[in-house]
Length: 259
Ligand code: CIR
Image (tube, rainbow, N blue to C red; front, side, top):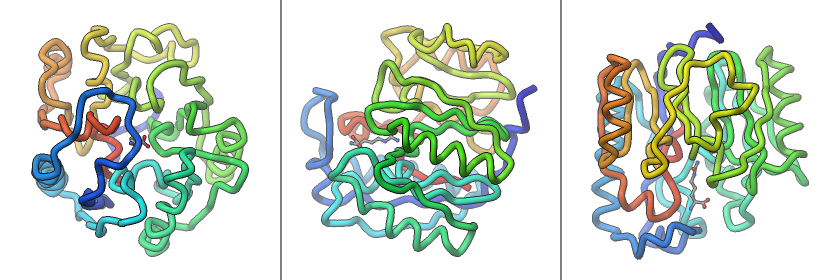
């Protein structure tokens, strides 16, 4: 066993997608997203967090930051500390300030500083262990700063090179005690060798962004092979339609900061 992953989360920070959300960064090639549908999908997500017992802190849209509803990228929150990131995309730098203002009421604060960059989507918490993806968004300097901070608070950082996908958690997530859900690209990694693994079918790689939250699995709708695999874990499964989020390169984890 790697550590207690059965943490009960009590709070989540989310942000309403702005009218300008379609001006965010995307490489998906899935076509233009629909605002009304996005708002509906986001509301269903928030309802799910509330259903799972979390107090949801809802922030207003930020007109200067069309990607700001992907709040996960702006902070790494552990039971001990909140690390405010410096997002890797220049257009997103500044999103973190309003998040820092909220988190300062709940945790001791630390910050990633230039020239370091970190996106929270590259950080996967598995008990006391934190996998940190070095990616196009999280640079080695940012990963180094984050590792040093996490160690200072008694956590165990482990670096992973993100060879595919936008963020580490686009391809790898925890779905059970000692069990990971991952794409074939990440299957051979030595640092993951002690885990049980559920390897996704290539055609369903988007479903890697499944969220284990308060004993429930929240997965994107429309991935039947992954659903069958996850059902075997015996946890309650909630499938949410996040088609419009996917069009903007985001997923279920990106839409909240849970602590
Ligand atoms: C971006 O490219 O930054 C946003 N359009 C998507 C961010 C998704 N965040 C995440 O996976 N943690």
